[in-house]
Length: 211
Image (tube, rainbow, N blue to C red; front, side, top):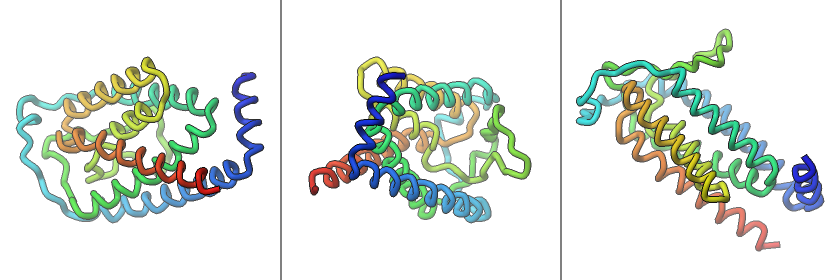
């Protein structure tokens, strides 16, 4: 707790950091709201069905509980790591904004229908009345894989990086076993996460170096 308080006290004394954090949080909220509306558009649009030799190897089975257990475990671990490191938190928020925009661009230009025998990724832990938990055609690229690999790229320390990478690998395999994503969705996710992290880090460095 002392480390948390001290790190945030020093960070908030930096006016540049405070301004950038507020702007980034506002941008993230707006981006998420826009993405919600964009998902309605994507869900109503017909897409292509891909032939996936990997998915053809096995019949899908449902693993929602274990899948989202690893997703939330990684998310909570990321919160613990990031909230004692304000500048890393700023970087992740910016990377998320970039990642969401990259995903929207991909889904706009590459509309896909899910595999015919796909088992939808329904969150077994959080149920909000009136909220659609399974977005149809929300495919390229895998958000859960991208988020976990993004945390692996941002975190410091070999052990944490390995944990996030292993979580990402497990979640990716489980999604393939459920035919919830095409193989290309999974393979592409770390690439876009790396690009988002790189762009966010470059922009942040330029901002602080410019003043």
